[in-house]
Length: 374
Image (cartoon, rainbow, N blue to C red; front, top):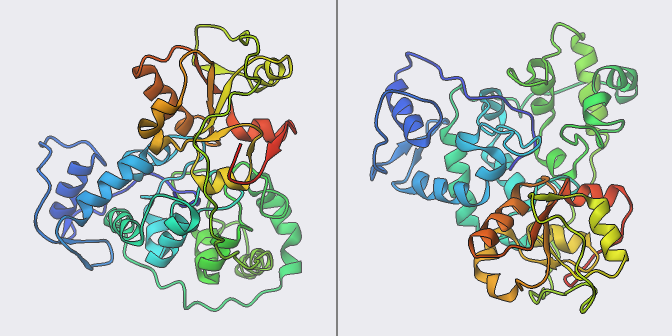
């Protein structure tokens, strides 16, 4: 879900609502207590903002989370189950992230990153009502009081922060806010929803429990302000969603009638270079793109068919057991792993997961294609 660096949940003890939060957290599996898991409550719930959530919403949000989000972001939003899939339950993050910020991240994703767009208008499976339920669930993990950061005014000069950014930030976030190991700071959706105050608070306080430190003791207040303005200078307009064309779900057998690829019978993963070499030799195979549709349409491996991981059970009958199937995603193995596991349970034996996935294929400059079809 939202690509910001967070840590595990730390609960505020002895507050007036502690036992309500503790019971809910135990049910959600956020931490281990000597208690039994309660049945879903029919009562209204009070979220981290002090607002009341209608009965049943958290249960429905949890079901959606377990279907679409848990494989990357982990149980209870603890994060990092897939590479750099951040902890949504981090208290410092939830104290400053508005519901609108969370919703935009889910609906539109973070283009160019492994965070996909999940809203229906972007080709994903989630309606606005579904997204609201997910936001309510994430908000229920909030344990720190909401901070009013959006009204904060920042005065700074972007150019003064270039050296500060290069020394303190570029290694993790990339030279101009992208291409680093961690989140892209110049992402249009992120910057369109993160206020200057949000950026200032994040730089000042960091994300305790993660590699993101607070810089309040390392930089001057003016230096932090200048960094905020430098990051803000990277903001671009967010592209409006375009109508998504119909996609074909008929798997294209690459090199139909060709030889069988020299894939080892044992093992889950197959290297990118091996798949490319066997394909170039004329070996027959099916490539399954397990990502949500918007990612596939933006760019996919040439010849791959779009079968999102959450739809694989409905489309199993369109796949063939006599041809090797290689599934891939960009996270880099979480979504493709769901496809692999499902097919294995259905008796498929000629199946592999593309090791390091789409991003490794792209980085090696192997053939890609955009659009709705293979």
